[in-house]
Picture 1 (tube, rainbow, N blue to C red):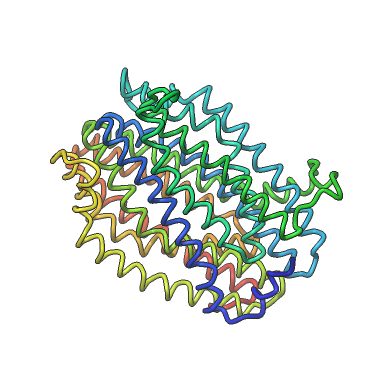
Picture 2 (picture 1 turned 180 degrees about the vertical axis):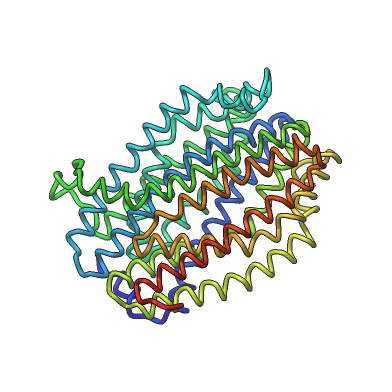
Length: 450
């Protein structure tokens, strides 16, 4: 069970690679999973791609909530381990694997009640609306599986295991390739489902992965059935999870709201702009994966070493994560400038859709450096259990500034869509600079100068 001992003893550069590479690999296959979904939606129709883009924002709400609370569980378990309080770590693990799926049930109820109203507010009508609802209603039935996987992975990451979740994401990618056409077009007793089949494949994959991750967690002895009362709700433990995870979840949820806002403004340019944005956004995610992998490593290392009062190792983690991240970002910018248009054309050959996607991508690739700083600072603040500012900066960049920018560009000056992308780029950099300075100030207060 004390696999995490290496997190406070081995060399930081080695540990970052050991944790970040499997995490990034898994996230690559997770993003490719979404790319496969977009590809098959494109085979159905451009309307299906637009509907998938619209539905993805509610899907992101699900992912954001799960990610926020799972990272809280990782941080709390990591801090407990660092302080050598193994029983407390085990209690957090048991409570977490119940708490997070319960939040999934609440999200499902919310989605069934309000999804159609949200889509109509964003301008979806008739077939476009029905496609979006067919997809998201099916996803909502499987939210509990998503949340269980987030909670189980949180326990594994806290012990230094990022490989198990990677394995589920690799499996999911290949399973999705097989299941999508099977459910979309039907076979033997399986009926033709269209876009609903894309969602059903996702739910089935999540259910299968849940059983695998549960088995891996059982092997760590972090979860057992010797004390069933460990699974029962506990006010103080739940409060700690909420206190640690709510700012991060709200951060992610604000990203979902921000995505809905930007879709509202993009819809003023037409369905081809929405489809182009959806494709460009998914391609862009490919190059953000290493930064996300690094943030996973930072969270595990900072939480364990901060709990163990190994403050020099906390500072060293930030230094190497930023160093490696900036090198990777440079590669990402060059790669997408060379191959971005070719990749986009694999999803839709419509010249107007491709033009919108390429225009978006060639501006937004420069956002990688800002996102790297944001991801690493967020992980650091989580690791030292100081997450409050995360939500406030997210509310600024995802809702307040995004609304001001969108309304100004689209409704006041009625500019071309490229100016929307440029304005968003500037906004993200302002948030990243502030977050870095705030993280530095917070660490200095804790006598961890950087």
